Length: 125
Figure 1 (cartoon, one colour):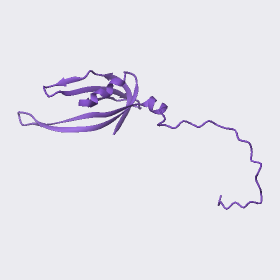
Figure 2 (cartoon, helix red, strand yellow):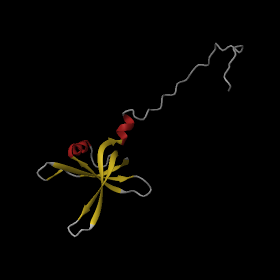
Figure 3 (spheres, one colour):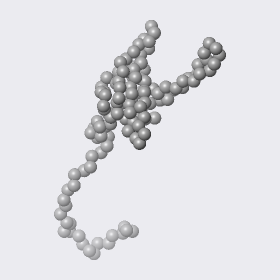
Figure 4 (cartoon, one colour):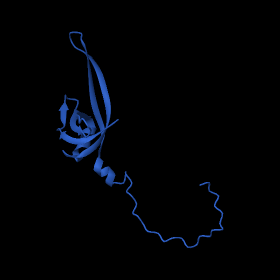
């Protein structure tokens, strides 16, 4: 899945526990009729992907939606969802880098002068 929007916040990388688990949060605002402010988390080595980006840039983020179940000490079951990012692309850079082919320049052509009206054209149109 992909989300596209403007970067609103890039948080610092945070480490949790002694096992070295790292997490970093990115917040984007979608650009649609009803803009949404969406937090996307990046974990472990994916936290470094955000180093190349700044607030205000338009990006496309590839994501996975994760869900988990937890039973609290009182025996109640709770459900949690998270959005995890695994790739970030600069939208304007993607267009400039050739992922979107540029319009070819218009050229002027001289009319053909070697056309023979007696040649048979077998095309049906």
